[in-house]
Image (cartoon, rainbow, N blue to C red; front, side, top):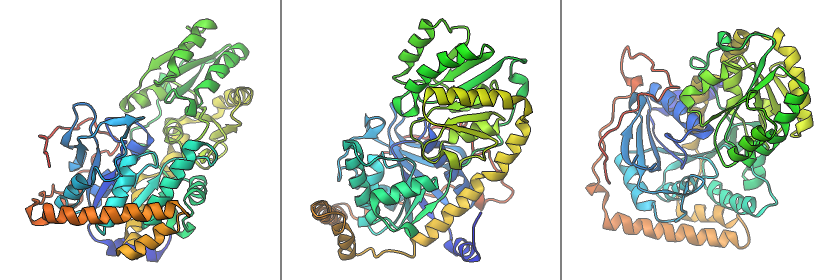
Length: 467
């Protein structure tokens, strides 16, 4: 909830905002970042704000599309280059982003995910044009490997001139502050939530005792602990004869999991579902008693919330922000080792008969609500309007402190970007850019029923608009 009267006053004084969400990760791709953006966008629309999303094209999905409650999505003509990210161009997307910012009369640019090159570039361009910016970090990074070092340096550059930062857990906040060296007061912790109206318990779908189903729904990649799962499943099946596994998800480690199932003759005890769409996740979860998360790093893990909302007892690795998600009687934490997780599952098997799925659901519903999350995001937007000078020299001073060599490089990038902006203003004047008509927001209409924010099944296509 909003913590103070001052915060409530900030929200009341905010007024209608035109918000641009930017990330390389959005529907039709499925994941925690995509779900977070979609749900917050829907709640902002219901609160009377305007929300537009900018992401890259997904195959034939390009141009402008509309989703539930008039959520407008620009699928810009850029293709993913590596793990869903577009190729970093620094200045290549400025012209198109400028048109969208002016056309949609944006007041706040909200970028998501440190992995997203589109997010980093949009913050630079938006700040050059004087827009207020907010950044949400959904991930944890290390400090020693080459990839983390370069990503952290880029994040330091981006956040040096960002008005406010949101992290999804306190662990994530500590990680982000250390990586980017920004003052902690500029970082707020706002967790993810879950649409409890969609993730309802269904105990009737479970097999009769003594059989117990353990459900795993995850991308089958190293970071999600797929190698750990390969060692764990045979160990559990050998110790506990009434345990079956349901594994949903796809990825490069799926082949190894299939080989493990064949090698140990577990075809009748391990059900491999392959890719599971988000619309079908609930139908898979309600078949289980226990949800297993084997992630090696996790800032929050919304999958745990979805499972608990469906009444499953959760067994998870003790990593990142996971210990913050649920209370200890709903979440069994173990070190990321097969032997420890096997012991955790044995403990969970003993507790399953004493758990009530509907009690779990009610507790999750009370703890996590997207409307509350969105109110807190609105406080951040209000605070963003009260900070940071938009003039070039103060911005350069902030970039200069980013490192002995990197700081000077960042200053050069900012100056070139500023000059390029001046060229765009001369070559393509603002008066020649048509303003987009506003789609009425559900929050502006009387007696408008609230469409469940968890569903994007009624996504409809609009004619492509090329700008």
